[in-house]
Length: 99
Length: 392
Image (cartoon, rainbow over all chains, first blue to last red):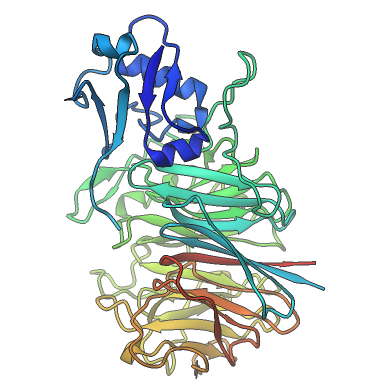
């Protein structure tokens, strides 16, 4: 079971509370986790990565195990602690000011 | 007794203001979609309880919301939780993909950037949602980068009307300060095939065949920032309004200049007349008097606030040129708000109500066609759009 934390605005949008738990088949990567997340909560499609290019939206970051994984390949394996559920995969809204 | 529902989009959510036909006591619900920018909300003329909202964010992109009960509850069309292997919603209500197919979309993929170079179209947000006059599940979306999309399944999926971008002038379109946005969509009740749109900064366009082909309708517009001031393309049109009883008569607030056309946009003439400044964003038409129009003059494009710190709506009862300042109930000192292009609307009660919202968070109402004004609310987030529904 993979643990995923999403920003509060996206929790509201998906109508969920707290940490999410997802079953991910095969290798645990950014792509497979996001695929599972979007399959479970289709409303999140396009909010974390672009519908067409599948690129991470610019003001979101991916963290896990105190590491910034935002620039890792989406097909690289996530840390074992994420894969075995010991640590969550964090999707973070960048602190970018704004109005 | 009739009721009025005012749909207010703001920088931090949506609000719905409701009153009976007296328009004195108001209930306020919201914020809906708290923390998100709501560029526009509008109800279906065919089913007033069907509402559409454009919810957007620099972080999370575009969301389309839909209500079937007048805004009490909302859903993201097709975006519900997983149901079954056979019935997975696709979650594509926020998927706006430009048509580049060889069958229907011309391979027109660039527009002019500020520095004169060509840039590809990139979807950013939905500025305006215009529900069909006859079908609650059909709705048009005006988007940035400028294009028009249509949904015929209640905003569950969207498809571009590619004839607009593909008609040939696209490489000359360029963004205004707010981005290259298609912000105005006007449907013609007398002719289902006719539609008007406006783009900053490209100009106004009209289709007479339901969106298959489009023509620019900018003859008579003059823009100082263009090397050819009479150019067919490139004008920064801020908003266009039309009275449903006179579909060939259009009123335009251009970047500078208030304009009028009596031939469905073929030719425009300036009707700024005695306005203190002809810069502004909003323009609208009285519900029962097609020659009575309203604007809110703004000092300049460099100073987006009212002249002299006095918030004044100007009314012309002659279709332009002769304007009177409407000030009763509006702040006449130290007021430096703006009124954005989609932030004025009218109701259709016997005594026409006029509504507008400000970047300072006030929504003002005049229940007597502009003679006197009062705020319905005064402390919302900055108002992006105002629409009004008159309900039985």
